[in-house]
Length: 230
Ligand SMILES: O=P(O)(O)OC[C@@H](O)[C@@H](O)c1c[nH]c2ccccc12
Image (cartoon, rainbow, N blue to C red; front, side, top):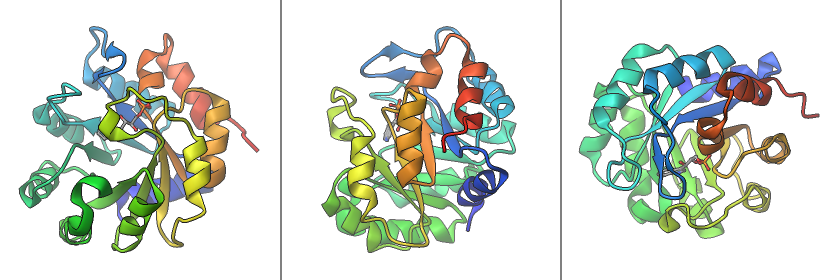
């Protein structure tokens, strides 16, 4: 297993809730999320809260991401960093590895029959792969690959957050997850109740908006990492 998957498994062993915390600067639904803060300030808060890994969206068009910020985040932390973007070229996989990223998001719906070769190419570059699915059909695409991780996106990414996805999709799709793959519930997780459902059916939760909108980010994120859910 690679660094992101390993970090999730070891957090679980420590009795902590494995959380991938997203440094999300902007969302089509809520607008500006950074609120004048610096991405590295958010990174330090997430580190102190004890998260398993970091996620950063490099997409510029809809999420106002910046690849140079991704590089800076990777250079500034020992935590594994996931690059989220609408990846459609192998050059982008190479750039992610060159930037010292630990994992890369590959969207099954976008890559379709190319998903498997993109996964293998990323694995050859020592990257964990998070193949993201939103349906049973996309889950079958993911199962046909060598991916180290599968993410169930509770939202339909093509709707750019205009839909109100919730963790019920994780419950519905998790029964089709293959063995031996680290699973992640993504999006729409804003309460400990949501987290309880997410971690009942998957190994980790990926959270962005609710962390970025919290008034007391450190204690809010800590409450998610440390909550005794069961
Ligand atoms: O902000 P939320 O609801 O906690 O969701 C985080 C993350 O799952 C979401 O930003 C995301 C999931 N898949 C993506 C693909 C591209 C851009 C963003 C995403």
